[in-house]
Length: 150
Length: 102
Image (cartoon, rainbow over the protein chains, first blue to last red):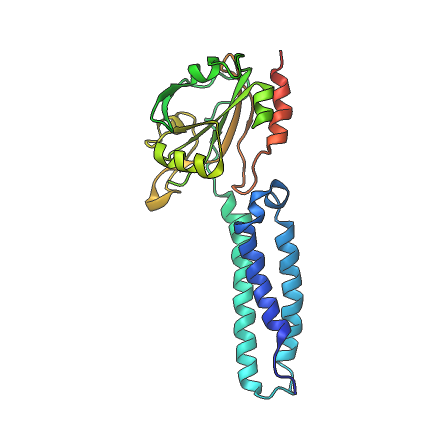
């Protein structure tokens, strides 16, 4: 008579942790961000525990077999949804980006522009390319376009 | 950041964020390089980097992109990622910056 199906619940919590930890922590480091191998390993561990938990939950010697089956199925399905959401967000939704075929190519001159900086000062690209850095003219400018916080 | 200074490369970040939002971000993250605001997506559109409707309430925002430009304004290297979660690494960019050493 086994009461608490710990592999099932630990597997479920691990699946939640695997998904959450990417966005909360591992996304900060290029090695764990570009390919989420840490999170996939955690998911693998979660899947193994869930599998063991499922076998236990469906075993005949449960105190409440019907309740055990319902709880086990529910927790397993929820875990699969969490794993599927993560895979979808990283490998599918992450690719929904415009092709940007009209963006400046290597060897092309970039269009000049003037925009406000964080102090509401108007700054032009020409200025950025000529204003000295530590007493010397910069060799180049790195333009980083990002999504922002809106 | 110090290594970009050493390489003579000036990083400039551009997004649709208002100057106040960028100022908050710079303070929180300790960034000291220039942040530019393009709330009307004008420059982002000129560079064909609009990600239509991807922002809050369906606003247009910029897709992630990096351009290394030399002192004549010519692109020497660029990165248009195919996956939002995969980005250029500072070390790789500094490697490419050696192209600009004259």
